[in-house]
Length: 155
Image 1 (cartoon, rainbow, N blue to C red):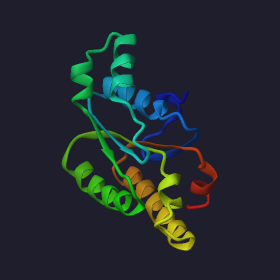
Image 2: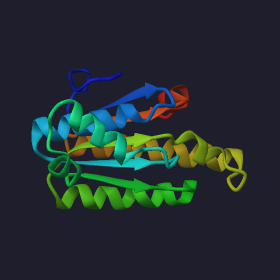
Image 3: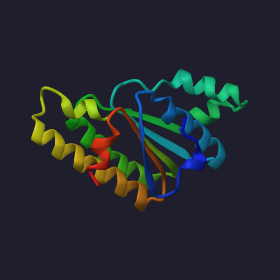
Image 4: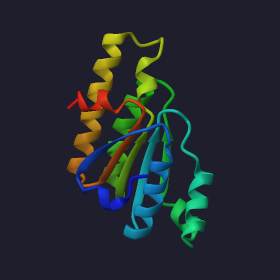
């Protein structure tokens, strides 16, 4: 499990795994400690708000107060993912955010509707954009995905 002290503002952390609870736990903990908002983009429809409620209760946090500050956006195709990233950039400009988390991206770019070359290009463009958003806005940033190596190659 990754913790806030393992992240640096303005730097994107890549975490290998399929457990999107890392993103959820970080969002809860960072929102609680910073009293600012978090944005999570979910590429696999697996980020669970009920898990976040349990995390709040484990540490005696007011789940209503915390969950009001955590936004979750879901993408179901690579093209939606790209669109959501651009909209996230605008949203992160307009409000007081401190955390940007992404979960399970790789499967979107391996879809039958996206050919191999285009999928690699879109994935690379997406990671570069996420990295620049995190840097420009000095956010805590994390991507949890089962294929972290492909993101390291997208620098």
